[in-house]
Length: 163
Image (cartoon, rainbow, N blue to C red; front, side, top):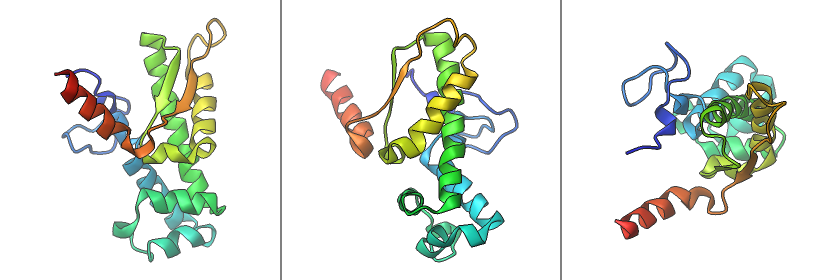
């Protein structure tokens, strides 16, 4: 089945992916990547991570994406840093895809996208920086999926209906 964008190679010798490879995009542009980025930033700067660390009770195994989202919305600096880093990787991924597919629009879904500009603004900025021919082409718009966290479920149901 085509469309497994999360398993496109992006970072040789990068983070281990559940598929067994060490270069997959989803290790850098996904909800689990956000959690990893947030924990790493919180460990480096605990004084700037109060909301985040309290939410997960200082336990990495309890840290989930909605906690990072809530902390970012409360002004937690490391949570916002994690979203900036995630947006950077997402923008790189979109630039790679645009170089091949030249889409008019990218629709970003899932729970991580529900923060809107906290994620999408850095993603748009990185997309512009990394798109090789950005001065010669119209930029694709980057939108939040209206279905939010249910986008995958709705897509799977629609696929079953079509089949």
